[in-house]
Length: 285
Image 1: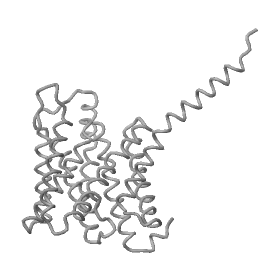
Image 2: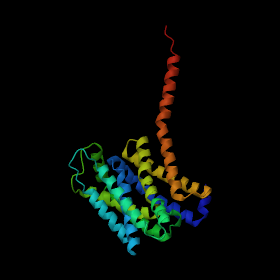
Image 3: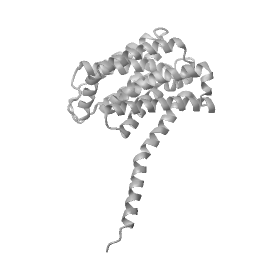
Image 4: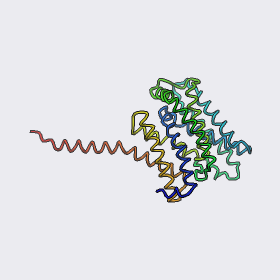
C-alpha cells in the first residue's frame, strides 16, 4: 500500500490532498450543519467560471478566479430571503446552474474544450508541484489559524442555524468570514482537485461523522479521519489500477459513506436478533 510513495508525484499528490481534504472536511461540518451543501458547488463553479473567463480573455489566471469567488462569497453571505416559501439552497442552486452554464460556454471556445471541462470537474492532482503545495499550505494554514482562534464563534453561529434561531438576514461579520473561508479554500482546491472532489471532501466526511458522533469535537475528528482514508486509499486505487486520481478519491469516499450508512442497519439487525433470541428463551410457568 505504500509503494506509491516511491514516486515523487504521488507523494506530492498525497500531501496536497491531505492539506485540502482535512480543512474542507472541517468546513463541511459547518456546511452540513447549516443545510447549505450547495454552497461548495456554487462557489467552486464560480471559481471555475473565473478561470474560464481568464482563459478566454488571455490573462489573470490566478487573480480573476479569486476575485470571482470572493465576490460570490460576499453576495451569498448577504442573501436576505424574506419569503418563507423560499430556502437559501434554492437560490444557491440557481447560482450554481448559471455559473456551470457560463463556464461551459466559455470553455467551449478554448482549443481543448472537452479536456478542459474534464479538468474543471475532476482536476489533475497528479500534476501538482511544490510551488502549488507551498502556496496552498500558506493559504490553508492561515484559514486554519482563523478557525482555531474563533472556533467558538463559528460553531455558535452554525448551531444557531441548526436550531432555526438564526436565518440569513443581511450582513453578519462571522457569516461573511465563514463564506470567505470557503471561498478562499475552494479557489485553490478547485484549481488542483476539480469541483467534484472538492465537493466530496466538503460533504462526505462531515456527513459520515455526523452519522457516527454527537459532539462537535468527535464529529470534526471523525470527518478528518474519513478524509484521510479517502485520500490514502483513493490514491492507492489510482496507483495500482491506473484510474484517474480525482475520480478514485471520490469513489472511495462514496464507498466509506455507504459503509457508514450500513452501520445503523447492522445494529438494528443484531438488536432484533438478540431480542428474538431472548423472547424464544422465555418459558412462561
